[in-house]
Amino acid sequence: MKHATADVLDLTQFDMSEERGFLPDHDPVECLASYPALDHLRTELPKLLAARRFRHWVHEQETMMPAELHHDDPETYRAAFRVLSFAAHAYVWEDPDDVAQRLPAALAIPWWNMAKKLGRPPVLSYASYALDNWRRFDRTKPIVLDNIVLIQNFLGGLDEEWFVLIHVDIEAKAGSALAGLVHAQEAVAEDDVDEVTTQLHAVAAAQEAMCQTLDRMPDRCDPYIYYQRVRPYIHGSKDNPALPNGLVYEGVEEIQGQPQKFRGETGAQSSIIPSLDAAFGVGHADDPLTHYLNEMRQYMPPQHRAFIEYLEARKDDQGRPLLWGYVRDRKEKEPTLWKAYCQGVQLLTRFRATHIEYAGAYIHHQKDRGLSNSNAVGTGGTPFMDYLKKHLEETQRFLEN
Image (cartoon, rainbow, N blue to C red; front, side, top):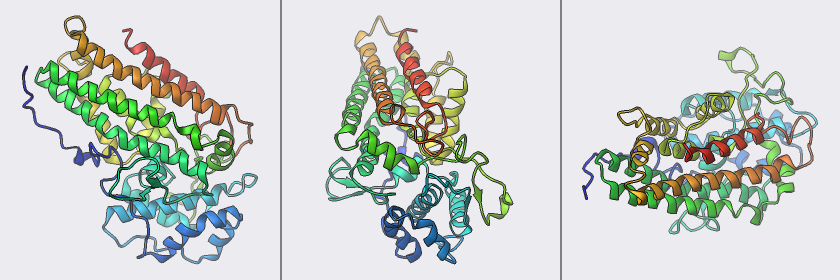
């Protein structure tokens, strides 16, 4: 057996790790003591929203906070952005019968400025909703369900907590899968069949754990409660019939009052599945779905986006995805290698199949609430059932080629 000697990729350059995946290296900042107005907003938002008094409260504030944060700590920036993202969506979606078409300057200006600093759009995206929105009960124990809770909620309650925490647990478990795929690519570069096989087995073990966590979604998140109490606040302003002209960010000089359109929070903004697709070599046809998936990358933290691009760029001398080409050429000669690779793709299929099952139960089969919370359009503003089915079918067919 050859021993790999290639340089080992430093995952930290992509703001990720084998232990935590795309979750931040340090547990997210919870309190914002240096910015008392923001910290008050963090704690009071669920109560104000439940009483339908949030917009009224915002209008009473002459200044929510300074237009710019005088802080160089990226963790503090992400925490502040998380609070403002929840607050802005609470303002827009507080009343489903009267969706706000304009966001007041007290929220819009600091939110817009922080988004530019972070390299992300001024909208509640997956990074603020899940990646930067948890804390551990016991910091000596792992990031797993039953040891984590959310920092920020809209209304709060078991179903909202569980829905997001399932994602956080999956993100943590995905770290070893993503690292294993990188190590497998490095072993391919050294033509080390045994090491590639070993790494693919490790990837599959992590994927199995991810699937097991996803299977637990119905344990504490009821489809009706999700649709009626959790989902309404995470919609965006692009391709949304409740915001046909987009959302006006009052006071933001560079856009001069022009409405803006951004996608809502969606699991498609997680970097896990695009990374698995890229490493395994699972492609998607050049159609509106592919363009949508590429658009979703703009909502990811820039370093996570760069990691997907890194994986996609790893090609063999025939221009094929590095891992796929290597394994495919040895399908007959190295059946154990081929089996390990197929297991990973099959688990990716299983994950997608469970996801589409939930999309049907939690959204598509729920009673349509009208423009503000349609059961036909995803929170990202797309015909999600068609898209998810296509994802699944393309993954299922991949090994047949």
